[in-house]
Image (tube, rainbow, N blue to C red; front, side, top):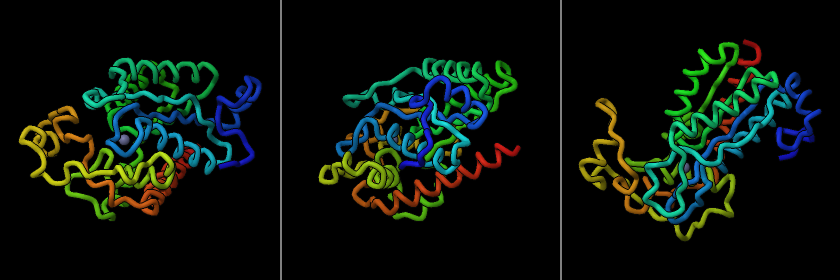
Length: 257
Ligand SMILES: [Zn+2]
């Protein structure tokens, strides 16, 4: 995606960055995870999706936003039973976000948007947002998930009763965004129905009662929820395009608010 204009702070000089504080009042921080995504997709799946969406959002905003430093490792203790997963604790992740924000704030930015491809980061981002209300009262901090932002599109797909991590929606996005890293011949279904889950795992998946957290090895032996074999690149494009247009629309309103 080339817009002719620099979208990434990392590619700017310090002189250009100083100008960007005024011309590009929003800094987007792409957040992901370094965790198992079943036998068919890479550990960086969530980071790759967040980066790709951040690029499309920044391009859609035509210079009004820049992409700041990434958060390539997220909160993934629930995936540690699977090889390759690297995690930060919730407090470390929150500290890293807060310190990125503090640096950007020092240079004059007042609007920060985290785009997270990994739902495990959501709780920590909520705590950062709450803390910033008192520590940085002049700052506006927003964050958004990806797939959940287009949940109506996902509902319109043929998804399994149990779906989510490395399932139909996430695989579809990867087929659209980074197809070379999707090993289609190795995509295998994981837990697909409530009957596939043991009683404790089933309790952890329901809403309408207290929240119970279990590791992914308890939910699904191969780390997959749903059936990634059903995913298509066209579905992935629909999810990505929807999420991008909703984030762009939000930022445009935000800039006027
Ligand atoms: Zn993921």
